[in-house]
Image 1 (cartoon, helix red, strand yellow):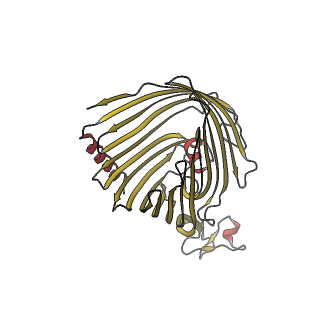
Image 2 (cartoon, helix red, strand yellow):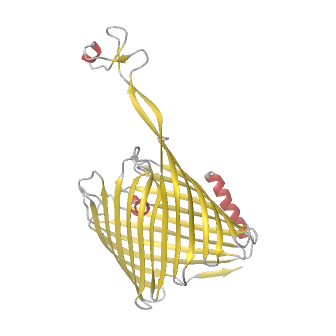
Image 3 (cartoon, rainbow, N blue to C red):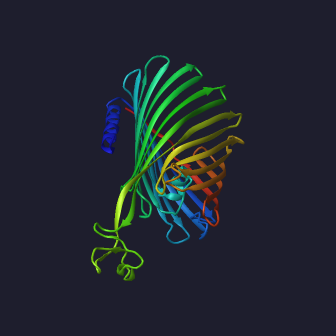
Length: 423
């Protein structure tokens, strides 16, 4: 499925929604923040500390009818640093639309546009970083859900992503994926599902292509009103093709021996004549390797008296600009506690270990840790103040030392009252 096809589906869902009587709303906000980081590039060899001042206007919007819903948020961030060469203007746009084709069938589509640096969204997604450079990412994902009967639901989804970098050292790439899921509602509190998925990643310079196929079985279970479980386990098979090359002598020439005149004059190839010499030529060819392994994910969510806690442990395949498809094992813990109606705290912990999806093709062993506690004070209904500390550490096999950073930030957030209109 191409981007043009996905855009056509998006336009169709929006048009179907717009023809009905609807209620729409818009909720603008702005954030002013300051941050100090003692290693802004997360480098193990050239640590630079910097102070950042940022202004982030944003707006959430929604459009709702009896059969359709559209929601989204757009923001633009002006970031200025005390060190030269770090200033950026980031932006993002997230959009989600759903439309009821019938009582049993619903279609939807989501789109995400992100412009930031590799130290932001990409590092959170992959745990991999080589340098700080601008990154642009566009993802469009249509979906279709059909309830076969009271117990069975069939789900189909696809996704297309286009990722580009300002730094030419990194490889721009595209990712296409599709998923088919069959879900059985075993009880009102338990669902069991099977999913077949396919993912293809291709570098824009045609030097790399990887196809990943996987089959998973999973369940969702509600133990109580407070405790829920989502889990799956399965197997993958990854086929990777890279453009390789080697230098060989031209046709009619052979490698010069140690006593040939060609070798004496610095030429690696000797022809039929005494002074018939030549240089080697680069010949490219495709090299294909296969790998296989397991994938899994387990998420527990628990509602506390004054907050919540969730934890996820997973192993999955994800695309990168440096290594293609890689296997990442992650642990995520998110904790929220409300001290009062106006004061709350959050704690986010992430640990990931990344390996190549084919060990003989991509040599990679990286570990990434992020710990981020924060406090949020609701000054009044529309105004809040937050304070945050963030610790990050990256360890890479073969590196002389690990890279660590400590950052402290403060942000003042203001939200205007929501504007809602019905027609």
